[in-house]
Image 1 (tube, helix red, strand yellow):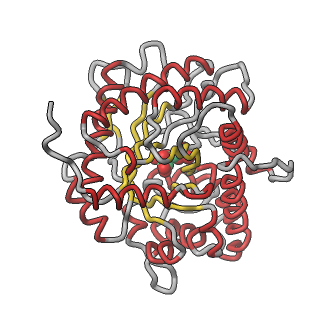
Image 2: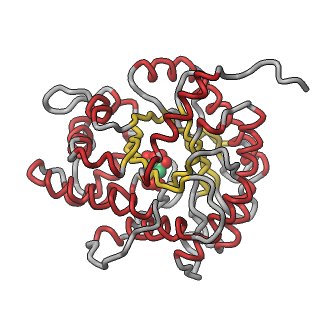
Length: 364
Ligand SMILES: O=P(O)(O)OC[C@@]1(O)O[C@H](CO)[C@@H](O)[C@@H]1O
């Protein structure tokens, strides 16, 4: 089995590895501001703001025009298609605002779930058709990384072998196409927290899913140094009656990663998956303090856990800009400290930060 057909040139590999490392350097993580129009609608509904393009733009303008020092804690921002082409009120493209801060721009590439017939309501993710052309265009338009979220569910018969294999293969195919077009693929196989399973069961499933994903990435000749992983933390199901400490979550999470994720992967940026802002930070901190070998950067790519307090502070009112930016900056800083294992919980985080952000069957 000779290695005759290299997938990438050494220049392409160098560029991809540099982008990936830059996003997770020095405790930096990712702001996942790539909520689809529908998902953003749910967020806005909670604060009684209408889901219009202008309201979505206004909230994101407030986040992206925060003080430049945000670049100490945020290395990348994932955008939804609409946002990549939106401008601030002075007419400046958001993507240029982010780039001038030294923040890498990313783009959501998956296009939602489709049912896998013959399974217990399991899904695969669509978006591979035309993906290469979309990636090429996004690269021209300033994006340097992509995101693809696959959803796996724990239940009696789930995840099935079929769902694990199919989603792993789609993730690998997406990752390969991204790399061919100069985009670092964020590989996101999310085992969602719905269910009453315990921590051990989530660990078992997460290991099976990650092992399949890395087998598929290898089969597709994906250059691991030019990728980032965005997994769930290993937690008990949302309806599990037994509660676990951040140290227990950390040990289960790092054990699962240690068994399945090659050391060549530069960074693992967790999703927040409906944890409260504070829990997401405390768990990340404990993960970074976990006494197991950790050859990758262990950081964050949070959507809800970086924006919940900010959204609540904003409430749709321009006058609340300062409070909104302060709330966002506070969570970004806290997670940057947690990514270095240096977060100290002061107990003054405010009510919004301890609220669960769980949504049942969180797909799109
Ligand atoms: O779980 P979180 O941290 O809120 O969001 C994780 C995430 O992958 O899921 C969302 C829905 O696709 C995305 O906007 C985001 O990137």
